[in-house]
Length: 422
Image (cartoon, rainbow, N blue to C red):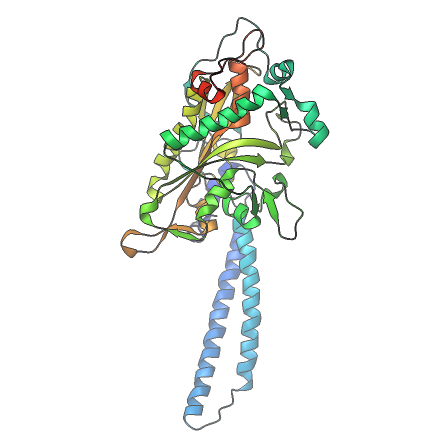
């Protein structure tokens, strides 16, 4: 959530920056709500002062031996005050709902642009492999070997699911173990096993609700519970309604979870094979840091995700997203895009984002100030380290042989019982 004080003090500046995202954000609607709030707050304060004054006068008369009964108009004012407070609470809810609909403000370093065509390349690592044969895509490779079965998954669950067998299922498990051990032992993250089912407040805290409910799988229970779209939700909400001691920061957390997304707005888009599924595996990185440390942390977190691709010998590039392509809660995002020979182009495999205090304000996640000062909002960051399914695709396609086998990179062989080729 944006800082209400910033909105009140500089609404034109805030909405001018939000307009870079390309959405339809109505400053007039905000001003109307805010003006009503101010007027009603003044009215409430006046009523409360009037009730206090008349009650005090009644007490003074009683102390002086006069009539102890409160005048009838004071009772009327108290009733009116109660009604106005209820109206004010309703207006606050309306204003809060409007604030929850506003995305984060793009950082000044984010390039302008309406869509992904304006994203700017930052760096590349490795060269796209040249094949002396026509490379297959991952579906052809998996189905040829009998290790990938999309048709069987469709019988069980419908479209956009998969079944992996044998060495390919083992390879996905190996990738997960490899990523977790790398981030824990080398990059200093703490591994977390976290819930896959969360309530609505957790998703509101990280920004998926209320705007993106259509992209979530909601359980048919008495209380509104959802399957997580990413471990970011569970990990970041560990700081919800909490004042963290200054010495505890930074918190660096990593978790492997399945992720569930309905992808309601992505019908017919990028759904070939394992590319965009309703259920997929991900190793997620989350950092909770003090405000002054988040930009440095973004560079560090991005480098941690890149290290996975480097060790797996996969060519990739890093791009900074333009304002129009930013996620809802992000102030700045680096996308890491891996080369996919089956498509002949780079595809996103990780998004590493700095949310600043946007999520922390929603979650009331703070850090205690040194010396006992007022607690300050923390900054939150997250990124895939990596999306396991897309890493599996990239590994299959980049390390394929002419006869359809898949070479296992040296860094991964220990997790495959020494296997060099499948």
